[in-house]
Image (cartoon, rainbow, N blue to C red; front, side):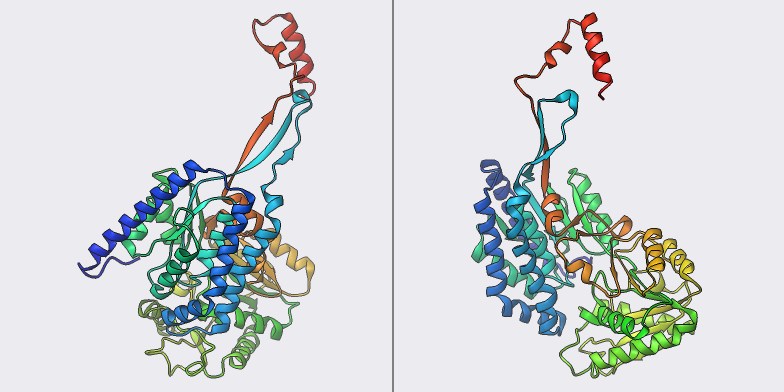
Length: 482
């Protein structure tokens, strides 16, 4: 995050922080008055979220495209609108089951009592959403939090101001402020948001900022879900269909111009297939985006700063003598900020693009001597948010899955494990803490309160003092059943 550029930002930040305080106090009070939303209230809130998403579809698509400089309408429909609505509808279908108290076994020595887990709303949930998928990554966790009966405050990214304002307006038209609201603003507002004593805070963004969010939240002992990132590998096994894998990887890397937390960050391929893989990926990319500088199908890099960062990674690789293959026209580098797919073949390990999440259309392709070599390479780094494996050898596949740790996996494709509500989405290690989507999201934003219902026929009183020989005899019998 960057500091405010001018003194004029201070009053606006001050007003945004006041608004944050007002809305948080309002929602805390509303929760105190009515801490348990009924099933019907939760369904109504999910309906509101679906309605505002569909009613403002064109407004959101236009705002996101303008914030980026250009983004294909179809990409926003697929990755933002459809995914958001699908998640909310999934929650509606399953909510009655999720809300039910869950019976758990009761030990024999505690019978005839009963034990249950009773889902309870946490209270007020804070959501800090990023710029790369600014609608979906605000509303998908909001749907989970609302399904769990909470109240929600959303802080969208300052890098997508048009979408942020459109979202604030749309939510204000559908929801009471005491249930769901948006706070806009820059760095100062974001910092204040992380320091607010929410009952749970979800942040989606970089690992570096996620660490700062966790530190700020820890001051209030606010539990966090951190959806971060990392260097997600794509492994092409000896048994893989190179052309099919190349089409998949090219799509996953070029969607949203690589500005996706689960985009393949680099490719590991058998050394003898290195050039063939690069050629196949280049061919697939050219078919999808034959004219990067003129097509509206290809997304711009979000800002000049991010574009300059990506260019510097390529420049460093070129200066170090790495083989670089650019796929597509570079005529639109400025001012459209459209960067062609840039493959870096067998780059030196010390390059910046090999040591930080790329988050753009730069794709290192690395040789692996064997499956064991690929596994060793992955395990030398931080645990990634996603892993992709291509091949037909099930034993080789299982060896990779068993010997690597990642947030999630798609086999013989990219991205799709994230789009399924029955699969939790989250990282592990430096790629994230916690998960949501589907029932996992409901559980994340609920307290599964353990409750023991004692029976009126219970004989626990025989263990009360004064302790006698009878107490010792009962304890001796009980210990045989524990």
